[in-house]
Image 1 (spheres, rainbow, N blue to C red):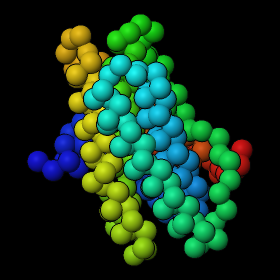
Image 2 (image 1 turned 90 degrees about the vertical axis):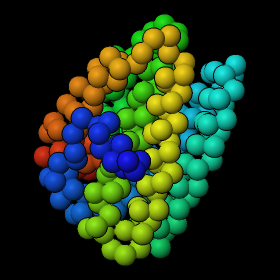
Image 3 (image 1 turned 180 degrees about the vertical axis):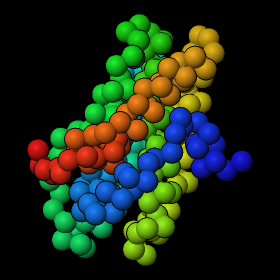
Image 4 (image 1 turned 180 degrees about the horizontal axis):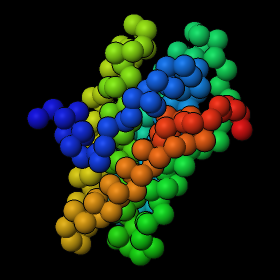
Amino acid sequence: MTALEEIKQFLPCETPQAWIDVALTQQPLMLIDHAHCEKKAASTAMTLMFRYVDRPDLLHKMSRLAREELIHFEQVLALMESRDIEYVHLSASRYAAGLRKIVATHEPQRLVDVLIIGAFVEARSCERFAKLAPYLDEELEKFYKSLLKSEGRHYQDYLALAQEYAAEPIDERIAAFRVLEKELILADDTEFRFHSGVPVLADNPTS
């Protein structure tokens, strides 16, 4: 089984075609938010490294992940510059905040939950890169396909760490987050973002 096939089994649903259709009409906004996502992913990894200094496996995997996400951030910025797309502030989508609603307040369950969320974020990114790629121009298609391997590994790293640090099997926690993730992906959304639900209203990129 390939990493992408594994990811499709892990996720509770496919990205709706309606989201793809909007993304294709909002490619500058898609790239701006993609850049923000890569920067946030690096920041999340660094935060985990600072918070859990006594976990060598986490430190190793998150250090590598942060470096790769920052490289991706630089690559997206270069693509934007070549297309005269200005990098601007964006309001965050409700995706990550929605997943964090059920994060435990006690350790080690809090860490395990955060790692499971990381697995979902990376898995959904990978799935959307794969679904978008065939519709994009040659340069963007090549770039998004090039991200699949690393993003798939990031998903696997997060999930493996969650299993490693859990005091019990994590199947029930994954199932709980799957319910939330499906709701967030399939629900109507008031804005378009890389991890948004299906946009139903015109979006102001700088709102």
